Image (cartoon, rainbow, N blue to C red; front, side, top):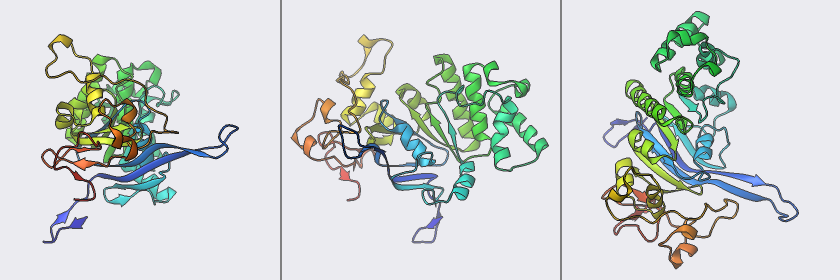
Length: 344
């Protein structure tokens, strides 16, 4: 808790990530004698407010899941700061971090792979309570019933095993397990991408209802921008380990600034392509470069139709457009009057 100059108490953001980096060391071999590093996440910063959703979007290999796993220290960060409700997570000891994970829970992409096949649903959703030493057997049994009801599963589901549920039901079970310890933040790693489209809508609606009821924050990892537009309040676009655009979801998705964001939006299918309004955006061509040997300067320049000489020489910093609050890392499209972060 911090205070302003007049003594007013100000709560810190729910999650504050500053300069987060995760580099994986690759041992040398016959071709490369020296060890090399994969810069999977490189100097990433963002904030998640209470009761709000920040979406991390980008192609596969952009570093979204690695960033999420580094936040909860499934991967130990190489550098940077991660604060949950004002508490620095990167310096916590193992016991303190274990206790803190009660407030920071993960929902994975594949609900079948993330659930233990030999446990009944009631045991699955209360496993965290057991591991954290919360309540007795009767208390945990009651809590299991409450959680199953909360996510829309019948009481009869308590004794069923994961293979007896549909894909959507399994993901509801995974969400119930994540909510068992009343966390402040859920990290949702593409939680609907493995589901049918009709089931995706049900899970998204469930997540919205839970957020409204529980005031829980979401870090939502996705590549489907249509899903992001329905759930997120803010969106951060990642490319090759770095954030290239971040801001309010409506502004970023309707008036994108960075060429990569525009290219991602151009790849979203529309029911009537001939009726697409506005100018056509250039399609995204080529493949994302290897993080072992990223391009110099702006890492997107090798695929960017707007690239100029400075893009190869200087890595663009995030600049903020005070008219919209959107921050963009681009030499060419940064609006006039934008201010580099750190120089404000």
